[in-house]
Length: 331
Image (cartoon, rainbow, N blue to C red; front, side, top):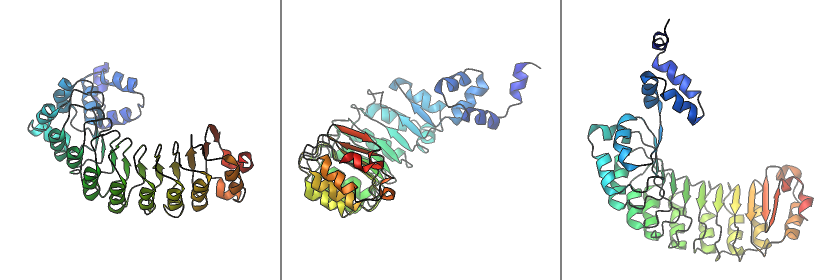
């Protein structure tokens, strides 16, 4: 029997199962090149798409109608005009937007609030958006992002125009947020963080690194019962008072990074440790007022069972994986 006849015996369902077993991208590419039937199955099965050039977008979105994640982070030339073409193309545009769950728009410097608004409103099922390093993004773009009311994961690193006003719009409308990164959003203050803590009770991950916030923000964050990971690298205005707030709050906290927080000392760090026996990772790199001796003394008062869940400690230039399994090594 000739090979074309053999391939005709394989249903699309069987071919899709074969495709599921191919983890390597090169293998999937080879699969597509076998024949038209394999190519068709790949187009029906593919859920992620990474585009390098904006001029190919219309044809690719017509071909791959079932994608759930679109990565435009390496396609910086996308602008409002391109978005208007993509979402205003009739029936085919509705087919790909209806299933979209993840948009990666990092470094899309040509995109502005009007285009972002069109894109967000056309994708009713959005759950994750990355607009990091879109340095021109500000409150208008934040207002457009807030239209994605089902959003669970939002990354806005280095959106330099974002202020408390824009953050408030996101916090009020996107109450389902579980992950939020605001690293390098220099206009965010304690006021914005306070509103965020009240309006987004489901947050599990929060990155406020390099923000000009004070210990008052940590007072607000301490009330977040589901927060598991807090990164606050380079928050130079935060001191031990703020860490005391964390020590008495955030019952679900597992990972804390206070690296390069110049005003933090061993006292504040110890307060966090005493209040969270389930911590898995602590980082205080380049916190020169944090010393190993008092921390080691505190660890000696914990039982092995209390400490075995912790996997990593970083202090100053000292990096000791598994150090919590042998507390005496910190003294």
